[in-house]
Image (cartoon, rainbow, N blue to C red; front, side, top):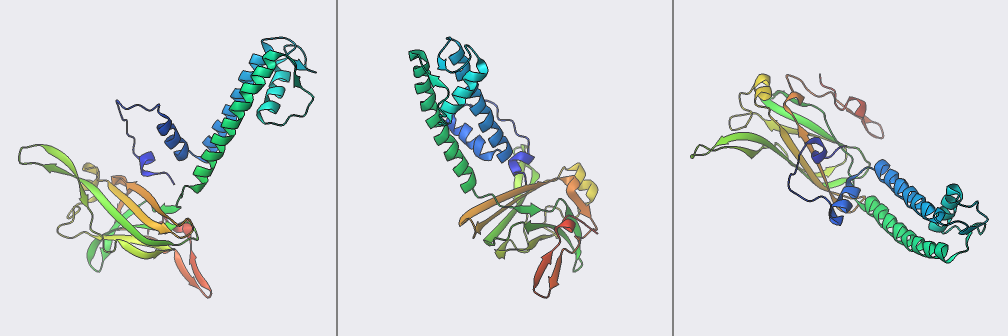
Length: 279
């Protein structure tokens, strides 16, 4: 599931993005596939760089072909990975200095990579599924806006709390037009246990920011909903956060969500294949 920041395109002009803190933050955010790719790419680039340095002077490595980049690369890899098979050996002061420098870089690279890997593993990543649609349908003869969430893991989320905001235009007494966040009042915004699914409901009555709005109004005003969920994950023993954004074209009128929960003899079944379906 993508984060809310990934869903909203924001360009921050005038800020530096080159500090180590920003790099660390970017690494924690990136996917495992990209992280492992960059680790492998950096590892290969360092070894290729030292292999090039070894080839600058002939006959630096015992049992290697003179100025052979491949032999130098293999030796560099063995040095960097502290394998040391013993076939390739440094035999000149120049080569010994390079080995010394590369061994220091190897220690730093291993420590940094191990630390980043542990940090990514330790970072709680909730698997909260948001329905890809919002429906507005009649419930007890009252128009009700609804969307739902699902817990994609077996772990229980305790004291879950959800907040929904929307942007509405506001004009001050001075004639200044602003966009203001307005709370969308929910029928229930807390759940002591979030283990299955949760249908979030908002009564569209007088006082609601969506009162008397049609589907055309939603599209013309480009209405958006910003959803935030917090709770305590028992498996991670940490507070988790999840966020999602709904746009105007995600809203469907006179529809309701398909039922996904069925009760079996020994438990409850959730059919996530129909989680986003409406009827």
